[in-house]
Every structure is written in C-alpha cells, then in structure tokens.
Image (cartoon, rainbow, N blue to C red; front, top):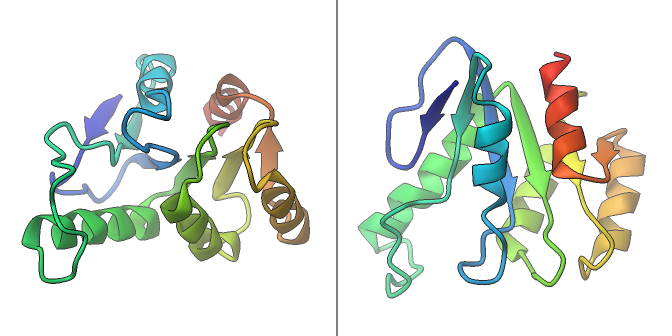
Length: 151
C-alpha cells in the first residue's frame, strides 16, 4: 500500500482508490486513517484528500492558490482513480462530498462504493441515487474495504 496526499503527484499505473467523503475538520472521524490501516498489507495506492497541513483560514476562492490546487488535486484524483470509497458520516452535512457524489454517480459501473449510515442528513437522497445508478452501498467502512479487497 502507498498513500498519496495533496499535493503529491498522482501516479499512473497501479490500483488506485480515492477516499471521498466527509472530512469537516473536527466533526467527521478520521475514517480515512481506518481505511489506510485496513489496506496496509495490499498493493492499493490510496489517494487521501485529508491534507495534513490544511489551513482553515484559507479563503475558499478560485483566486486562492492553495485552495485552488487542493480542489484540482481532488478532482484529478477522482477522475484518475480506479475506485472510490465515499463515506457520508452521520452528524455532518458534507456538501463537497455530495457534489463529488454527483460527479461520480454516472461514472463507469462499479467504480464507486458508498457507505452512508443512518444519521446522515441526506441519506434518503444518497440511497435513491445509488439505486438509480446501480451504485453498491455498504453498511460499514470495513464492508466497503472488504469488497475492494475482492477486486
């Protein structure tokens, strides 16, 4: 397993999985760390957007270079990855995750694995989109990672 974080170069080749979903610093658990531990003995390349040096004072504007580079890194990662695990944490709003979910919903079949437990405020919407676009849903992060291991 290899972990790639912003703004490291996203490698070509190898099996890549993008960890999309709730971050909301201080609200969502660090579920990405859990996935990294579950995949540590595999050959997956993990694209983890949770930036170690994130500065919440950065203006979320196209003119802000740091913010611009982060968002473009994430979009590139979503596009280039072989797979994506998307986790919607209960108790979060996760508007960017919902945006990314919409971007990936129509992607190649099987690319997106979704975990949306009870307690996520828009679970009904997520469930309906998953049903409509034949996106596989899982009850836990562990179950989604187990599915990834079968691939």
